[in-house]
Image (cartoon, rainbow, N blue to C red; front, side):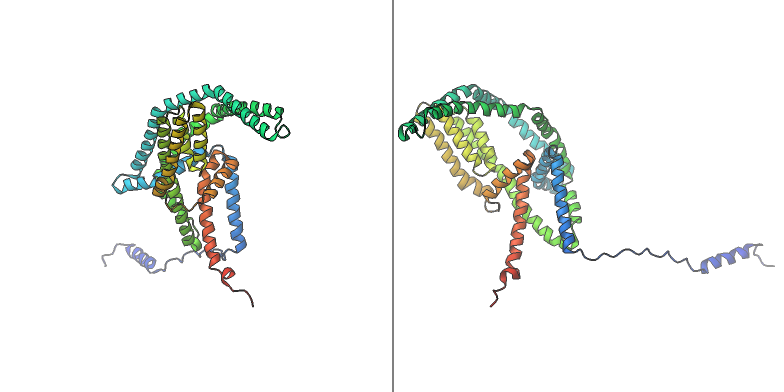
Amino acid sequence: MSGIPPGEGDRVAADQQEIIAEPEPPPPAIPRPRYGPPTRTQRIIAIVSLLVVFWLGLQLFASVLAPFVAAAVMAYALDPPTTALTRLGLPRGGAALLMILAVLAGVLLFALLLYPLVIVQIGLLIGRIPQYATLLQGWAREVLTHLQENFGTDVVNDKIRDLVSGQAGSMLSILLSTVTGLVTSGFAIFNLLSLAVVTPVVGFYLLRDWPTILGLIDSWLPYRYRDVIRAQARAVDRVLSAWVRGQALCCLILAVYYAAGLTIAGLDLGLLVGLAAGLLSFIPYVGSITGAVTSIGLALAQFPHWRGVVVVIGVLIVGQTLEGYVIYPRFLGDRVELPAVWVIFALFAGAAAFGFLGVMLAVPVAATIGALARFWLRRYLNSPLYLDPPAA
């Protein structure tokens, strides 16, 4: 009699059968559809569809996108120093928070130091509007009288002279009331508050996650054109980074110089005019022309002799010399491949299409279009369409 308990042999045999039995075959794979390469028509439709969606999005949300675009510009400008801090061992979140706090501290310091002086000068300008209007009326009357004496009453009659001299004085009052209405309107206050509150918060999150966002966008690029798109993105980044960071530094230096120089020259509104001329210098020629015309006009109205006017003109000439031969070559150089006319057109076209949001988007869009235009121009110059000789 064996030592195997009853029933144990059947269980062992069943286990052996399960071991010997072959495993069940896996379920058949579901066939996936195979797509051919996209045609040229499909690519054009996809690109046009993306552009239309982008345009419609701007049209629908232009009134609320300003703080988010400003936050993106802030994150883009602050990414290099933030990356440098992370290489020193600081976490990305801590480095981003430190950079945002540094920007806010600079803005608050500027507001605390210059805001009272700017408010005083704005009040001084408002109080002198009647005086400037009277001087402008007298100047217009003298010019028209001189023209009437030289060319006769057939060219300039008394009605035209009285009309122009009267309207010349009211132009300043209309301009002042328009600017005051724009500044004190509810929507302008809402935009200012949204820029002051929303922009730093969104800017912090974008700056913290900037490498992740770039990596995610890079993973969406089509494999076939990935290298070409990356090369064009690097070209746009080279132009845009040089323009944004270099132009911001140039504007700051020029604003400090013109504000200090015109104030030392004795111009009553020198601080206000100098800051405006420096900050508007990101538009080629606009800041220089606006500052020159305004400061010389105020100097003619303020100083009873030509000495003060000559000093103001000297400050402007020195500023233009420094701008053209020292500041811009040092901080911008030849890295900015954006012609001045193209920048002016882009800024005015963006302002006409989307207002303040369009002004912020104008230079990035202009840099992108410029890089793509140079890319297609190179392809054209290397193509048979350009290189093939004419038929005999």
